[in-house]
Image (cartoon, rainbow, N blue to C red; front, side):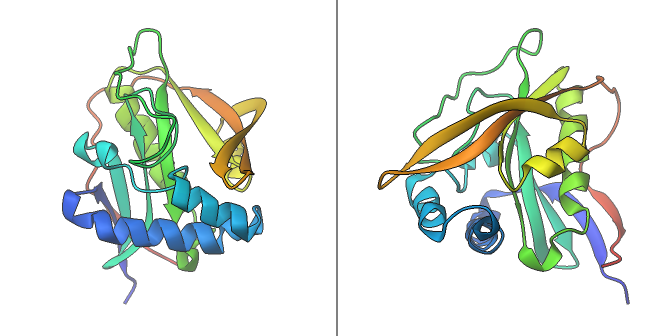
Length: 197
């Protein structure tokens, strides 16, 4: 039987499973684009990790294939662009949809479900939710490995960044953005379909 795919908002009780997925994804998929010592430093420093503010704001989502946690990611109406609870570059300031861009945040995929379109599905969910929140544009800091995903989904940008993760190490990325249309009356959670992997 084909397992059912569903998307739902993350809950506080999901935090341990999300943290495990982030570590697994970073170590297995992130290692394709970053040295292992930089990946470990990113996890220790909070550059990558669990952001409970997103869960409290109900803007962080899980993709489930059957009961398996296959991917996670979200969007935010707060100024923080990346990082975990204990990350350095954080601000809980609310963004103004009339002049600011919503943030796309913390996308991680279980390596067993990589390159099956789940991140694009989750990204579309976040874009719709941000549009319903009044935002007309989105910004993100893409990792080297994630840049192709966002370009394939209409994001543009060429400003390369490096951010310190401790131990004299840095991660490379690129700042990207996308204009979106505000869509009224669309439900972005509770999505269900069959998964053909």
